[in-house]
Image 1: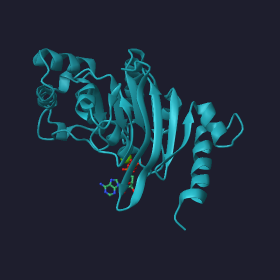
Image 2: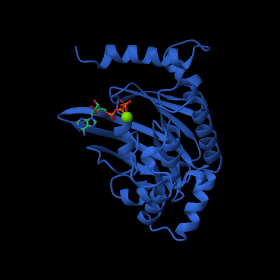
Image 3: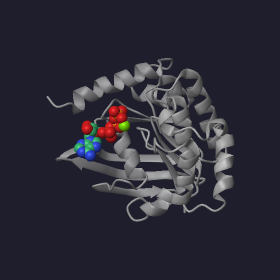
Length: 251
Ligand SMILES: Nc1ncnc2c1ncn2[C@@H]1O[C@H](COP(=O)(O)OP(=O)(O)OP(=O)(O)O)[C@@H](O)[C@H]1O
Ligand SMILES: [Mg+2]
């Protein structure tokens, strides 16, 4: 398998009712990089992420995640990647510990008790392990969701707006953790609407109307938007969406 590229796809397309919500998307992310995935509501971020981790079958396109074929080896991709859904997806009527034990069973992980213990300590959840997930605040739910998607030691993290509705301190702690994971060699694709988070990524992919409009470092994205060096990312994204409206929006 290719060690260099954790994500390497092209032509990815998904249609609903004849409308391409992701259209001919190509994306390459090198191992150990943090790629921010930005774009307006409904631009196709979640759909793309779900195609990458094998939960959604593309109508067209090809490529690999972790060197595994996205069309034919989705099961293996799922085993080696962690997907944090946009909406909290764990069991509200199970405790933190029970949720993590459930995930460990799902992945048939050996040494379950110890793994869960370690995950609880690592993410500062041990003091709350008996608390029902449904009673947790947004920041603690987010920590649980991150712990759950890290439990099977994935090499690729697909994080779909992981910090939406989370307070600034919890967001900063979360990003410190993401950067630690990337330093350890885990590749991260993370969607966000926050500019400060975009700044913390190694590189960015900007999507609108299902089409990838800009790709690269912050500096490169600013240049691709046609703005002078020194313009902010926010200005670049506004410019890109204005251009996209002219090109893609229905009349
Ligand atoms: N199962 C589906 N059936 C029909 N349309 C869908 C389905 N899933 C997504 N869509 C449409 O595809 C488009 C892209 O949706 P997607 O959820 O990928 O966007 P997003 O970029 O993640 O948006 P947000 O920032 O709001 O999370 C939207 O117009 C959405 O309504
Ligand atoms: Mg989404």
